[in-house]
Length: 318
Image (tube, rainbow, N blue to C red; front, top):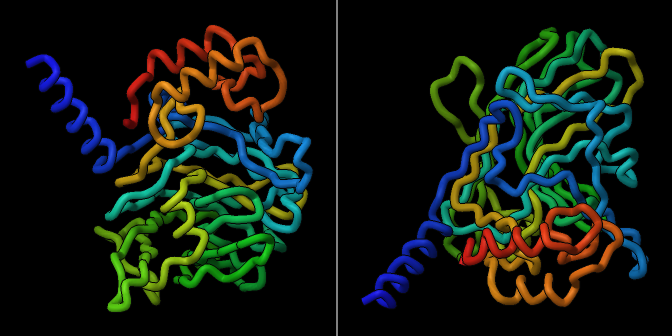
């Protein structure tokens, strides 16, 4: 009877792992139960160096009034050789399940600046800094008065492209603007090709609406992350100097049917199991950089803390 109970519990956990809604409302910080990270992959084509880079800079972010506030760093970008990549908070994901969606509310506050570049902030789905898909609230530097709109971008192996959907313009002349944005699974077309929809909700609207031409063919990078995993999080881009940099304030992050990589999942397959435990044991005592796979807590040392992390989370995501 006990074995049958354990089997039933395992099945229940498996079902819940693939049909769930996760919301972090940033109440005083990141939800400690979620595997938030500041690490991103910055490929340099050198197999002897670590590609994982910690983008955290505590001078440029804070949690205030239930929001994550990112102060834009001059020339912080995911484009043009990444410039100075600062503060890319993200959640490692193992993949997406049917019916997946990613949603947030962002406020872009110019803090009195008159930007001369396409200042933007939003959601990013990323394999590495050369391969990602983004949905962003953008300020048009060429409009007079200034205005805001939503756009998308798609980069594959440093080939930067339009992401397929956009909407606006809004907030003419306003010093700041708030927008809810959502990217979601939209099933498939008659030929079986996967589709996505991009949606927005303005402050005085009661629900999300599709951005033209949603639904549309799912970009290659979104397909790759949905199938094989990557990172889901926030980004911001500002390209000018100034004492009062713009800020991007995120109210929440909502994930539907997105499989997170649980804490203690050393091999990143979405399940904390014997393989992860063995990897920590075989690497015990090693020290080095962020690319130490068995360094679960990212303190550059594989030790008791990493072993305990795997043991406490054993079975998660399985």
